[in-house]
Amino acid sequence: MESAATPRTASHCPVCGQANGCQPAARASFETACWCRDAAFSDDAVARIPAAMRGLACICSSCAGLAGAGADERTHTTREQATAARRIGVFDSGVGGLTVLAALQRHLPRAHFTYAADSAFAPYGERGDRYVLGRSTWLSAFLLSQGCELIVVACNTATALAIAELRQHWPRVPFVGIEPAVKPALAVAQGRPVGVLATPGTLASSKFRALLQAQAGDADVLLQPCPGLAEAIEKHGPEAAETLALVERFCAPLRAADCSTVVLGCTHYPLVAAALRDALGRASAELTLLDPADAVAAQTARLAANLPAAERLDATPGQIDFWTNGEPATLLGIAQACGLGAVATHHLSSTRPRFAAPPLQAHRGRP
Image 1: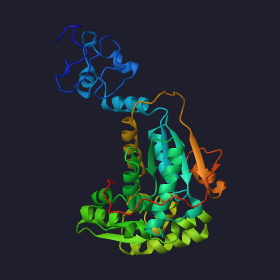
Image 2 (image 1 turned 90 degrees about the vertical axis):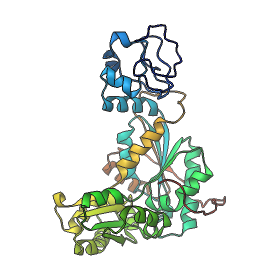
Image 3 (image 1 turned 45 degrees about the vertical axis):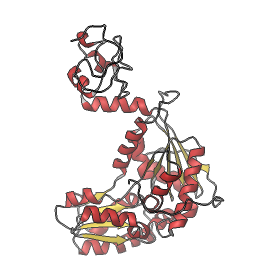
Image 4 (image 1 turned 90 degrees about the horizontal axis):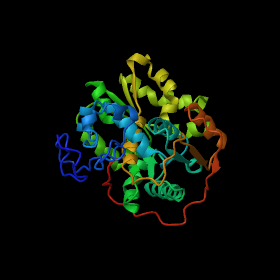
């Protein structure tokens, strides 16, 4: 092992030998030990590093393994520190995106979120491409004006119809979208029929068709458009008779096809998960409902951890600012049901955007 005179800049880690381009710590402090990964570790993890390694080791994954720090601890600690005080924007056509926001808060408890519910212009799933792109552009501009560094498009239809153009319009802003979890569903189903519940706009989009062709192949996938369901959840609530009637109607073909794996292709649909189970006529143990919210949250956490260093780190729990141009009581009720503990909302302008939306182009962005 090299001596304490090891130069601070090294092309190879002096402990594990990997060509990481690391800058080893000059002292026993490992707070900035691995510049190539920008990683930081808990005091307990640092305490397990052998004394002979201190001042020599970078905290890349290999060195951390030698030091006895587990992968879960490394990931959790690094992510928590790297994402503290981050401002993350989230938008949806209404309250459905709150199901995604709940997952985001679980993954990033110290981040600060701004949530925009565009309820006055819902539903997106039955609108034209330019309409959805216009509203998505307007909402993204609003979230950026609030200081958001990263934007989560918590709407399947907006992801399908607008996210590629949003990324082109703001190339330096990370955008995270959401799409139906077709591939995981096929893995769970193991050759049995898979149902996909989604808005007409999502199912008709070229992005979803490309996804289906790439992932489903010749698998037995039943696509069930659900016109009006997101709007009913928004206007009447998840337990209203009007909502439950639509759930029953749209689940009937899936029940007849004996689908035991169902993809929820709209962020509103997890709000009626219990009703979906009843309408599909299967016990919980026999039915899998696929909701990609946690996968979206995990991807958001990865991107947030790679943002440029924040000017300050805030040790307090993160906060959520709620904005809506719909009925505040509806948003607050759903937010509390999702475990978000919302106490207040701000008014989001319902004025149509005055600027032109970016031109529609072929979808080239990642999901």
